[in-house]
Length: 212
Image (cartoon, rainbow, N blue to C red; front, side):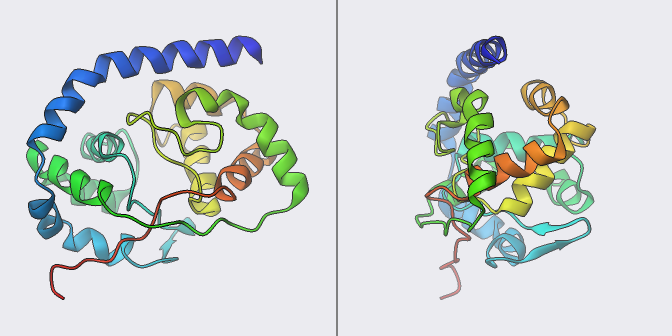
């Protein structure tokens, strides 16, 4: 376990150093107002709290307040098809790098508070222990400040479970997460999802103001 944690810390540090310069460029250039205009299609799903993906069934993630850099990398993964989801791949396929940066900036500026999931004490105990290897990138409770990695605190449990399953199966391709998820049992996946979803966080399903 200690070796895995050390390897994860080293990998996180490498990614942070490699992306810090490009992240600064994106932050300086992004236009949140234009991002709101472009994000109207996104809000049909991500702006509806609790709306569920039809198959496999899971809650569509909250992305209001998410790190802009992570949203950029996620849309890039859908665009190059290293992350599987046909609807998201189609949505991302027509977006330019500038469009993606603007959308990410819009969502990242949203303020709100997620409502932690109610989970069992047994799941919490297992999940908290298993989450030790996640803390280097995501923070102890999933509300980490490293912008290359997503905030997890308060995210929907079913979404986190599906994401970990997809990393384990290869439907999502990521050098760190694929390695982390490869050896997880379904019980550990559910416990990790329970731990992070039960924590207080700043994620939300944002409400648009453009047509108000």
